[in-house]
Length: 511
Image (tube, rainbow, N blue to C red; front, side):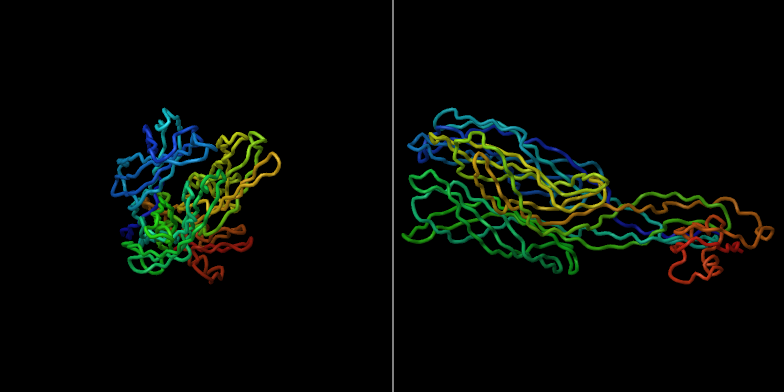
């Protein structure tokens, strides 16, 4: 008699592939004639703006630019603050190791390695630096699972493998416009903001996302040195085409503001036009279940099984929250005046929290603009760490953070010789982890057992609480259903049953 084996092919989680790419920066920024000459460099920032991010097959391609932003003081009366920027284009392509990967945008994050900025002349600034861009992709495995066995007196214990698979993912660069009131004469230094999703609905082949763009414009009045902030909210609604998405899928959306520009009105008294370019990220996940053989043996002959791990991703947390952050520190000079503050954030990361638990956290820097008694400004950087209050069981290597985090509100205050920064972080996305299932990969049958007619027809076994009936029957090469019937165990699947208390069990020999 031949053992019958039934297989099923599934897509399992194969791990995470990561690489680091260095993006060098060597550029000169020329100050146009309509802006004042450079007196002092206050702060230089380097941040990436990724326009295209595609993972097809085993190749990742991305392009965009590094935005070099320089805040400087002019040589005019009052040494007022000004801003200029330069875009440094990049294009990268990476061959991934042979294998299968989840298609679509890869996960990107990074940090500034170094940044040197100096004024070469009154109208020329030299910037040298490097940015490290990290690229991460989900590896997939095609697995042949044993889902059923038959004949040769085989007994099997099944298990259900449950998890989620990414059904679709896409990014879309969007544009929003709105009127923006100007009083006249003010100088706009910077416009930034965040996108807050409010509702995301999935239909066949597309996702509809509704939310709000929260914009902040930092400005200085004509002839003034004090910095002020003006807020603007723009409601937006976008539809993304996602091939593979279907109703019932779970969705996660977040977005980031890439650039915002103001265009002055042509007519007197009319409001300026605010144009915002932002990127929306949407991904859908679908619940899946598979049946596999977790253990097997034969009542007729010796059996050798080979097991192997199979991993599926699980959704552990859906994040849609605001996280308050407070940072305090001594001022580098107690005589300075705090003019303002802004915050830059690193990418959210899964971190080990001790005792086999993980948490979600990251790093940030509060950039505090200060002016001394002469009006000369400097930027004091205060690094800080943030984390969500919740933690989850596991280790960081088995977790994935498909999350967007942005600073939605920033305010600075001073008390004596100390400065306090209050910020509100907007956190949106999913936390996933890989769950391991040990399943039977192969079954080999050996020599037949001696004739059981010469042996005992019944055994007594003193079981401990929590022992699985299948394991007890396997020890005596008995049929699980015979063991359950002999001990009047009738509820549920006998192969998965465990003893509720210590007891003496009757073990009938398999015929």
